[in-house]
Image 1 (tube, one colour):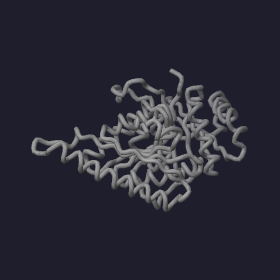
Image 2 (cartoon, rainbow, N blue to C red; image 1 turned 90 degrees about the vertical axis):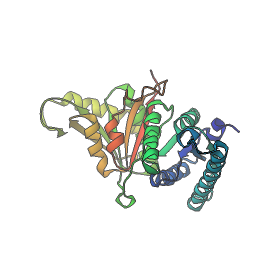
Image 3 (tube, rainbow, N blue to C red; image 1 turned 90 degrees about the horizontal axis):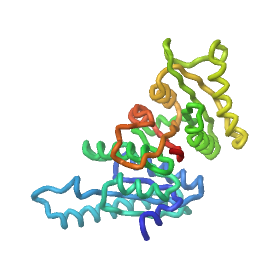
Image 4 (cartoon, helix red, strand yellow; image 1 turned 180 degrees about the vertical axis):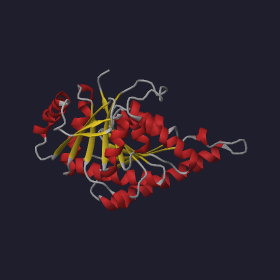
Length: 290
């Protein structure tokens, strides 16, 4: 069975043995159970990042396979303890994690990853995995940011620019709020001279922006009548406003245009500061339109 077959319509989680990957596994397990979808555990290891002049590649590959199998089996056992009725699949691939998970994203329903690996090199690589997926994956991506588990937030925040390009992210956020029975805050930011911060609805001069924000909520609210919705208009930069809004919630949701090449990683639509600084979970939902 190919990687695409194993990941088809599944919640896919990338693991590497790090703390954030373990937390991502737990979140993905809950998500798969809520959505009644299979969970696919993927561990990818690249020989290119580990070989040295004095190391036999065949010996190293065998060791990597053995370590990978143990990691996948341990993760599957952890899932079985939490959700014994959940269908669990697994894949061990010896290639770059970005390549493996971007391939998985072609068929997956959702990709979940941690944001830091084991050690400085792994941290850099796993960070680049999250960036690559957020830019190029064809399905939603959830990145677990490092944060103490005991300080879990409540609710979901989604950013919108009030154009159709952000509608997929807003719709996905509404769906997640309904699934998790939690509140949703829809945030629209704008930049102008003056102090940054929240703009009250009673403050004059912003009627059009408020009307656009209400229109966004009205497009999706009737489909999710049980979701408690809050609207926020903020003056300032989008990445700073959304990072601040994310401090007290479980997840912040952003939209992104899908790119066809993985090499333009610095050309970011998604505010990079949110992926770097937000606590807990950051979800990136692609806009399928070019």
